[in-house]
Amino acid sequence: MPRPVGAGYPAPPPPGMPNPAVISPIQLGPPAPTVWQRAWPRREAAAGRAALYGALIAALAGAAAVPLDRPGIGWPIAGIGMLVPLVMLLARRRTGKSIEAFIWCAGALALLSVGFFRAAGWLFVLCALTAFGCVSLAVGLHRRVPAVLTAPFTLLFAAFRAMPWAQAGLATDRRPASAAAPPVAAPGPAAADGPGGAAADNPARAAADGPARAAVSGPGSAASDSSGRAAADGPARAAVSGPGSAASDSSGRAAVDGPGMAAADRSGKLAIATGPAAQPGARQAEAGASNSMRLLASIGIGVALLLVFGALFSSADAAFGRVISAIVPSLDVGTVARWVFVGVVAGGISLGAAFLVANPSTVGEGEPRTARPVRRVEWLVPVGALLVMFVLFVAVQLAVLFGDRDYVMRTVGLTFAEYARKGFWQLLVITLLTLCVMGVTARKAPRGSGTDRWLLWIVLGALAACSLVVVGSALWRMDVYEQAYGFTRLRVFVSAFELWLGGLFVLVMAAGLGGLRRRTSWLGRAAVGLWVVTLLGLAVLNPDRFIAAHNVDRVGASNSDIWYLRNLSADAAPELDRLPEGARECALSEIAGDLARDEDDWRGWNLGRSRARQIVPERIEVHNYPCYRRY
Image (cartoon, rainbow, N blue to C red):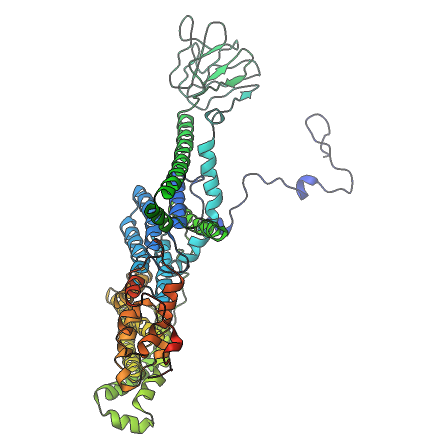
C-alpha cells in the first residue's frame, strides 16, 4: 500500500536518489570519549585559587632564587616555594595518601637541599632529577609499577593540560556578577521541574497543579490558573515558598520578591530578572575577583616602593649599596630571559602538580591483563637450570673470597686486579637480567594450588639469595680494583648503584615473604624510595672529597692521578690541600680558577665552595709549577 502524501507526511525522495535520513543520520549527544580522556578525565573544569596562587608563588620563588649554572642555596628556597603550597593543597584534599605524599615532598626538599651543602655538579643533577620524580609520585596514585615508571612523564604532560584548566580558573575569577545569570525570556509554555510547578497548555495559558490554588516550592517556578493568571493563595497574592520564586498578584502579573527571580506575565512568557547580586556564587566570584586585583595591585605598589627607596638608599650609602648589589642581580637581557624561563618552568610544574591532585591520572593504573599461565614444568626447567648455574658461580666466588687466591689466579692466568676489573660489569648486567627473569616468572607461573605457590616461592627466593651473593661479589671486585688503581666518580657511583640493586633484591625477598597472593603494588614506590636514600647517602659521603682523600693517600706510592684530581669540585679542596708542594698547586688550579672567574651571589652560595675559598683565596698560576699527569 503506497504511503499517503500530504499534511503531516514528508515528501518521498525523487526516484533514483537515496534517502538522506539513511545516508546522513544525525548523531545525538556528545561524542564518545577517547582512550586518553577515559584514562585521564578532567574532573574539575577550572583551577581553584589555591592552585593558581601556588603556581604564582612557585614561579616567583624559582625566578628569584634558582641559579641555573651551579648548586646553591637558591634551589632549596625555590623548592620550599613550590612544595609548601602543594602540601597545603594536598592537606585540603585529605585523601588516604596524604601522609605518603608529604613524605615524598620531604624527600624532594631533602634532595634539593644537597645543593646547599655539596658543590659536585654531577651529584646535584642526579638529586634534582630524582626530586622531580618524588614530586610526581606525591601528586598521583601510582599503585602499579607501570604508573610509577610513567609518573615523571605524566607530570610533564599535566603541565600542558593544566593551561586551559588555569585559564578557566582565571576566567571564573574575572567573571562579573551580572554574567552569572543572564536574562532569559522563553516564549510559549512554561514548565517548572519541581513539585507544584506549572505546565502551560498553550502559549498564553497555564494549568495550575491543583483545583483552586498553585503551590510553588522550587526556585524560579510559577503557577498559573486557567485564565493565564497566577493563582493567588488568598485574596490578592500567591503563596510562594523558597528563594527565587515568583508570586502573582491580583492583576495577573507575578510579583518578583528579589533580584534574579522568575516572573510569569499575562502572555505566558517566563522572564528571569537579574540584578547586581543574582546568585550567592556571583557575589563570591565578584568579591574574589576584586580581592585578586587588589592583591596584585598591592604587590605592584610594594615592588615600586622597594625600587624607588632602594635606589635612593644605595646612592646615599656605599655599604648599603654593596649589600643591594649582592642581593639584586644586574638587569640585562640574559637575566630577564633566565627569570622568564625559570619562572615558566617552576610555575608549570606547580600547576601541573595541582592539576594532577584535582584530576588524578589512571595511566598505567589499569589492572594487568591476566597472563596465560604456563605449566609447572615449562617454567621450572629454565629457571631451575639458571638457579643451578647461580649456585655453581656462588661456590666459585666463595673459593675466591675465602680460599686460596693464588691458586685461582694461577688457574685463570690473570693478576688479582685484572681478575676483579674483568668481571664487574658482567656481574652488573647479570643482576639486572635476573630481576627481569624473576618478574616474568612471577607473572607466568601458575598459582592455582598450594604446591605451585610454594614451589615458586622457594625457587625465586633461592634465586634472589644467590643474586645477593653476585652483588656482593661485584662490590668486592670493585673494591679490589679501586685499591689497585684508585677511586673515580664513575667507580664510586657504580658501587652505589650496585648497592641499590642489592637492596632491591632484599625488597623482592620481603615481598615474597609477605605471600605470593598478597598484592605487591608498594614495590615500585619502595624501589624509588630506596634510590632516594642511596643518593642522600652519597651526599653525606661527599664523594668528591672521598675520592680526593683516598687518592691523596696514594701519593707516597707514586700511584696517584693528580691530573684527574684537578677536575674534582670544590668539595675536594680540603683534601687536595694536603698534597705536597707542586702537586697541591696543580690539583687546586682548576678549583681556584672556577672560584675566581665566577663569584657566588646569594642564590649560588654553597658550603663546599665557601670552604674552598678559604683554602684558595686567589687564582693559582699553573705554569709556575710542574703539573705532570702522575706523581
